[in-house]
Amino acid sequence: MKSKAFHTITIFFCIALFFFPRLTASQESDSIIMSPIKSEAFKVMNHFFDYDKSIPLGARTVEKNEDINYIREKIVFEGIANSRVPGYLGIPKKGNGPYKCVLVLHGVGDSKESWWKENSFNSGRLLTERLIDSGFAVLSLDAEYHGERMLNNDYESADVFIFQKGWVMRARDMIVQTVIEYRRAMDYLATREEIDSTGFGAIGYSMGGMMVFNLSAVDSRLNTAVASVTPVLKEPFSALAVYNFAPFVKTSSFLMLMGESDNRNYSKTDGQKLYDLLKSKNKEIKWFDSGHKLPDEWTTSAATWISKYLK
Image 1: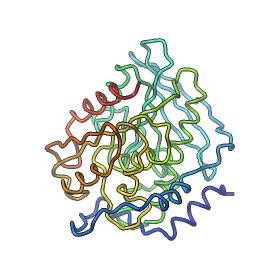
Image 2: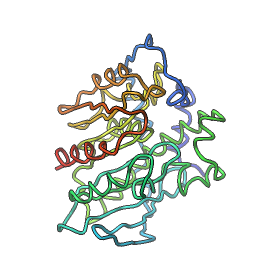
Image 3: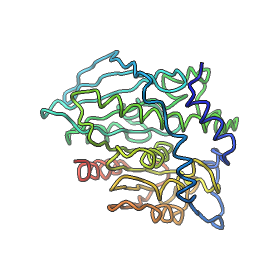
Image 4: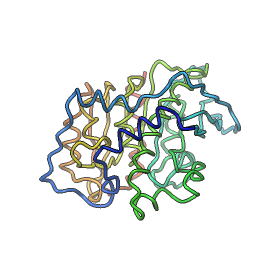
């Protein structure tokens, strides 16, 4: 039986105006003004990212591997809608802990593996190594319908049902569910003695950048955040248009990393407008001479930002 939280989410978002394919299909007209929803409306929207905290985590470690600089555990825990969420938790060998932890969120078609394997689209391994070398633990999860969770979509890639089939409602539920499960992940990390759970960092790439906006607006446990090549959905009143979340981001510091030629996902004007909506005390936007695939240097910018603000 699906959880009450999942049914509530579905009911709400069925009335939301949300056309997910526009995230990477075509750029909206600049005539559409990014006008965020008001605070009262956001309070309603925020509620639908809530979850039942009393549901047991049912967490366990199913695998442990040792690298030169870190120990990586494969963990699983209870998500929502009776899902089991797999993830990798990397814990530095140097230092005594407890360690601050950085949540890393992948893009469409990627998985938790992208933050650990060589030559991934997001240069994720470089980022993970830089974070661990700086003394941070790192947690990556498979978003719903990604990685080991593709079985929930009959093993078909999320790229297919989003961009070819246009199953926008499934895409909507996927995003909301994954954001909630990262909230559950922070609950889990608070049970680990190796982790300093007084504050977390988050770094997202593409769809993951979008979820970083969502997560940092609905959960105050994030101290700092980095959103990279975040698609800008310009659909008024959309529950998942990141500009509706930007003014309500709770982190005191926020970094945006964008590609100047990522025209299918946003224009430079879009990126600047989104940045201007952020109210974080310390914020910055950095543009790279690239498209949706940023150069490896983005990982240095992100890791440096985390080291500066995640204390």
